[in-house]
Length: 263
Figure 1 (cartoon, rainbow, N blue to C red):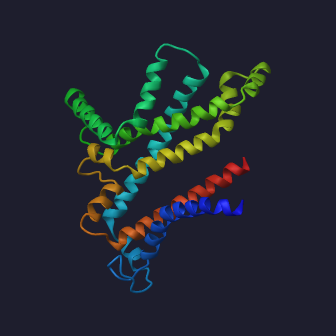
Figure 2: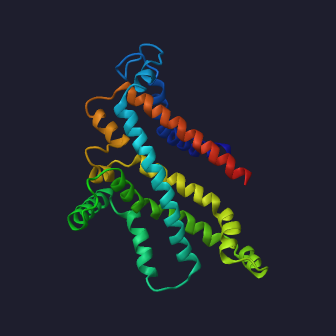
Figure 3: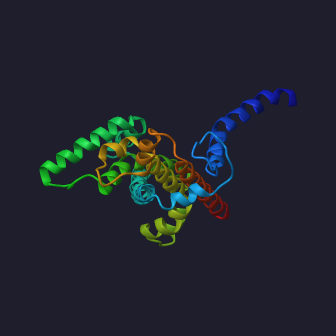
């Protein structure tokens, strides 16, 4: 058995190395004193200090975080409502259309979504005068459009596997439907809600293509700034910023894992 497991372990080790070694190298070279990101010349925190004075990167990062947080929150609300409609209400008029609308963003290329959202915003601006320029609101709406589909899939699977006997028992004891949902259903699907929120937040923070279509001159997200700067050559400040993002994401994953285990 041990001999047979070696090929599987080798493939597994290669897969993990392929995924995580570049990230570890990125973090390592963020402490490189040299401006050349591929030449090690000594350990230094210089680029982290310069990052704190780079207003373009910091403003773009703050904008991306605000968009991602608002997008994730609204996407969780809308995705949960859609999942409840599909799981709890059986057959109803428009169910097939709703399922198609939720499935389309999962398989549609980002270029198509970005272009369609751009045409929508242009048509709205010409018709009702809104939006007055593209920026925070247009990027957030575009991100909600595809993020809620991912949230709906996660929450729907949790609702479908949830035992409804607890809800039925609470209603038999006189609890109102809203009370049952808030005190029983929501705590039971809380792991799915948290997973959906983190997924929507990550998708928004990582998006480049859709944001490029629906953003304006005054709203540049972090992926857009990084992409434009990388085309001119990788700056060590990008490595420092990416290392901070990796650290924050790892911390968020640990906190989420601990909170879910306690539940």
